[in-house]
Image (cartoon, rainbow, N blue to C red; front, top):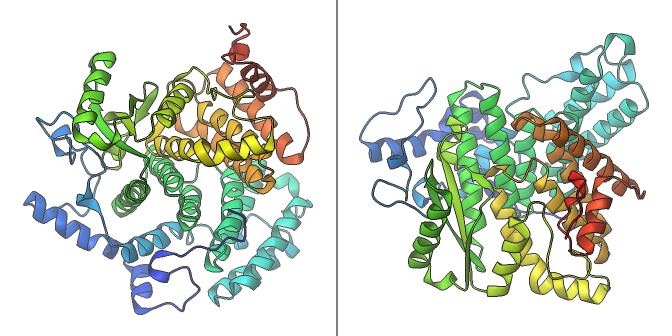
Length: 481
């Protein structure tokens, strides 16, 4: 979907309406958002829920659908589903969680012209004139790029300037969401993350953009990343942690509610024999989902987490099993996601048919469904055993196909998303020297693709090798079969 694509937002909170009494109360008392959910949970558990401090990680028996004796459960459970209007309120509260602490327009020794643009933009936001505010923030970005970020560049670090640029981008995200332009907001959310990938609120804003575009699996992934970053940064506000988990859970539910080509099953996994556990998971799936047994497979490389356990990071891990109505879709996806580096099978040029007509036919009949399943797999997989760059390489293949479909705008959006993902990786997991080199090369490749330049870095080598049907072993210096 292009930058101008509009999207309905639950509760109407992004539509630019005047603040209601409820909005004002939520500003002062955000914990109210959780009260109905808390009351249901307390009634269910038969005990009062603590209002302060960190929640203890739930045991395996507390996970809905995966209780003692069940061995596996189709998560997420409907037990945590919350009304859509309230979810919209939760989303807005999370998106604005850092506003009070991020008044960059008053700090960092900004140059006079930039300071004026930021103040005018903030004032327009308070007046709910979001079009004018966006224009002022765009001016501020131009001033930053032209070297007018600070009065004295020697007194500010590159990190300070990046955080300032990220904050300006985040304000543009909010403005364009309010203006009903989630595609353009998404573009700025990617840029905000690239400038400051460790800040969880940037990922929440990205999730909101995906949700407005009805891309719920990607919204769930962004919410998952936000939750993990919040926990790793030792965020101590109970309400924020709860809201993040609820939002992540809701996005997973939305993704599954509209999906008809596949179904899923999550199986708790600890130290059992993985091969045996996968066989058990596949058998259980077939019993529970008889309409999706044309092809069944369990992701062998993913470490999957679920919202209820994310607070105890890394916490309870799960195996994810998928079943498909269409056998070929399932088999093709399994081949793609189970190889050491993603190689899309069955095409003369991997994931990039040489003819435009062939590319369009492939995309409509197969590609869309495969990408939907891949996106869902990413909504609970924070770490891929194939390596920290595996998801990014999958998206490079995706962008390559989009280039053959002559959808340059969508291709550029995918590459910007790749850059945001790669920038975040080091804040979520340890990265070896070799993986860091690959990461930096892929980031440079993404920049080149966005600029329309050809390059001879890692992605170019992977693409050439996989195009010949090899395994993309070039990264390790070995020859493919």
